[in-house]
Image (cartoon, rainbow, N blue to C red):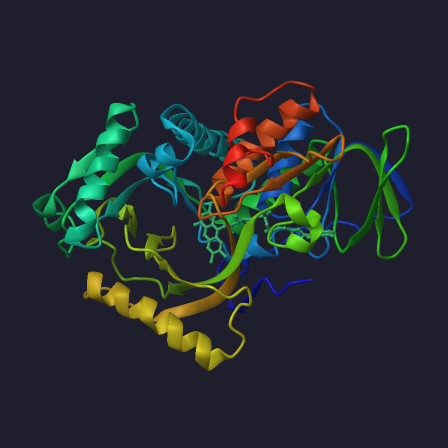
Length: 409
Ligand SMILES: Cc1cc2nc3c(=O)[nH]c(=O)nc-3n(C[C@H](O)[C@H](O)[C@H](O)COP(=O)(O)OP(=O)(O)OC[C@H]3O[C@@H](n4cnc5c(N)ncnc54)[C@H](O)[C@@H]3O)c2cc1C
């Protein structure tokens, strides 16, 4: 079992009451068993319950306690891989189709958020994606041209447009509309609660240690304490725990990332429309505001799967985030009240792993690796729902586990 995060997280402290769910006990039967109760598993569970499919989410620890609680909650259709780069990788038609699916998934997240009786802190936002250097400008401009010519909601801002709205100047920026931000922990807790009220079974503190399939096609999952559940279909929504993935299927790198949250600001007026901000440098710096007037900032990804343990070592790195915030917004309070380091999974071709297990009937993966994990989770929930219903899905050849691009990485 991996360490998902270290340090002091912000989102779990925003909720005064967190619902608890029972452990799996005895022998249960459902149509779909979902292993993992993070953003991915709960999205799938809610969508399935709302589609009249009986499902059970089984979580080793607590709902939303792993990567989901370290997530910084930016929901964007633009990806870690630019549309223009993705076109080079999988062809223009499929790249545009994938980006359109991301736009659609943000819309679906908005619809789900609006349907939940609990809080989510979901807000529609625009994003400023700026060129970190003059050198990156032609690439960013080409990306704007490609997004614009394919009908995505984007504007181009030059240095004066940026400097007239923010206390910094950059060589150029794409402004995307149709994005959003959210409190990911609260969102998943509210989805879980709504799902449970609508028939979704949720079992916490249940570690699935064995998965067997009978010759009648029924899957049997067994927990560490000997309880079991039978299902016609199984979804693996296990996050960044590659050992659960039976080796060869997933070509991923597990790295670590850092994030921090400031104290409540006296005023966010220097921050135009509280837009989300990110950049072309890799690894990239990104930031957003919260509903209670704080700033969330993240970045500094490192090639190491283990979150930094020592407080001093973590603080030293995260201080760089605070300094970068101060460089951009010298008039704001850049002191961080919360800071954490967390594991972060990326695929080698920059696309999530969503689809059928090629070697086992009725087994599926829902792994939203990459900076847009939440968008991918919602995309996956609808896609897997369709596959479980016996329908095909146009995205399967792009994000499925046997996609041709994986053979080349
Ligand atoms: C610092 C940081 C910032 C991020 N920022 C963003 C962002 O701004 N926007 C965005 O969209 N994404 C972001 N992400 C990515 C996002 O966090 C993830 O994509 C998403 O939360 C993953 O959800 P998940 O459900 O796949 O994984 P997890 O939340 O890790 O859930 C997987 C669950 O599976 C359970 N599990 C595993 N094995 C078993 C088993 N055998 N039995 C039972 N349960 C099991 C685990 O206990 C865990 O709770 C960020 C990630 C990090 C680390």
